[in-house]
Image 1 (cartoon, rainbow, N blue to C red):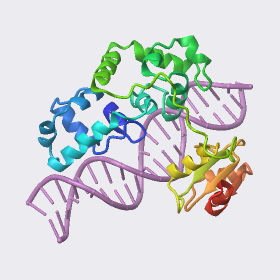
Image 2 (image 1 turned 90 degrees about the vertical axis):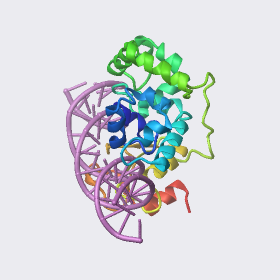
Image 3 (image 1 turned 90 degrees about the horizontal axis):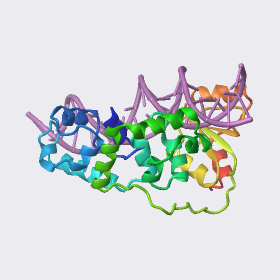
Length: 236
DNA sequence: TGTCGCAGTTAGTCACGGAG
DNA sequence: CTCCGTGACTAACTGCGACA
């Protein structure tokens, strides 16, 4: 389970490493934890069911590519309880390298906005486990991106016309995927959340909206369609 | 070349942590 | 205490590649 999470799109995004492949690798004792992935041999992979040269090469390439993933992706991939995609990103804002994050103490972590005692404790616990530390060292040897001292600041592109605005997406959009819409909004300074509340500014409703649509009506939150969204975002 | 199964993708739902 | 949003889980759908 942990390996699958590590390989998932929001973490290290290793294409071709799904449940069936992982099951086989574990059963054949080729991998025990996430770090073993980086020491797999081509022949090991070819020996698996439904896996010939083409797939093996694709998988090896995907594993190799994953080494370059950002520190936030890696932290999320480690699967620390209560630390998901968003919290991982928050963490890298305060700790530009994995080694700094590893040394964080409880008081310091609680100070961070969006991290409370539960999450802080879970992080401390994670780095206390010898097994986790050993995995991290193996990942370091494999050459993964552990972050850089100087935080790379994201360039502010253009005007932040959606600064402070909160969006919720529901239904299927025609011209974007959820991820694209989310990126557009955050580049313009807005924020996308998963649930509708009083503080939501816009609910963007696409095809087949879900329960969020009803909730928005109940809370009298402004519901807009895809066209209106494009106007607000300044897309022709 | 067709079939089948795996993996990727997207979205919905809800419990629970954080904050005030 | 209440409210909000994140994290975690699930389901449905789609496309690709192995295999024969």
